[in-house]
Image (cartoon, rainbow, N blue to C red):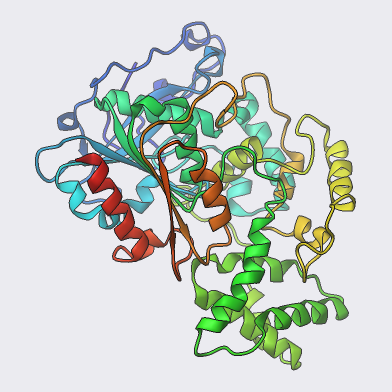
Length: 474
């Protein structure tokens, strides 16, 4: 069954109770939802995205998908999408999926439009919001969204609210949702662009539905399998790039790495944690100027001035705002279901905590993250996903994002983009991803940060993406 509807509100394309997730005892509990027929939705049948500012000329719709394609008892949900029809005669589609996880693709509509530029003369642009996000039906976890209470407690409450469907908010299911939208809109093949987490999702699609790809762009990529739960390249890249940023800045001189180490020691000496410093360093991934700002705070701290450091770290915990703009539940559920952890996911919470401490004690190179320790890295916000300690163990319906033992990667051409200064999805990780595909190229954008192409549509990364797609889609 496929439905097309006008997206009147960002909470989803809904017409009443009949479009809610199937309750126990319903028909959906015993009968699987059929895949959509190819072309069962016509763009001419879709209306404008009413109530969706920033998306002029787009049309919106939705399809009904099962939470679990192999188990109808999980019920169904709505997947919303927006389409910018080609300015001229359409020769196919570019699908774009956002990062986070938690950020809806439709929220980046204007940036995608600028990125793809004149490619949209002959290509429809299709933005699919993952389950639980944006104009798809939301995952209902209000405490988590408002930032009420510690994340681990709010996340445990969220899992209870989601019930057995907690495991259905995962990358492999989202990849299949994209393919159902492709089928419904009538595209035999698509070009797919993913940024940040969207590269993780894009790789999943490339392994699960690789024969449906004309081309694949993975912008700021990290691998769907084989990654260490420590994510060691993130902090190591941050420590290295603070010096590179200083060397290239007219406002910074000297040994920035030494200042970083001395600043960390000042914090420890005054009985302060270094965790905020690690987060600030990894959070500098978007531009060289951010690294210089961290260095400036360290320099001031060494000389007894704490103002710049306080300015850098003064903000406390906030809520996450509107679910239409960002879903905290969407991010945490996917992260906990799909990412590697420093513990056995099948273990109890008590056992997980023991595994976590054991991983820290047994880390083989205590100086690898200098000037930070493995314990400091493990406890930082940027790496270990500690809130997942309270998340339920996976159930038997779980499928990983990609399974190289049973699935082959796409043979379509693949472009992997990395920003030189990106320490969230590093150039090292980008190379690992590029090596997964038989027809791939890896481009490192000098002086660029995380997903630079979405912020600088005329930058080197964006030009590389357009050039690649022009060549491969001709």
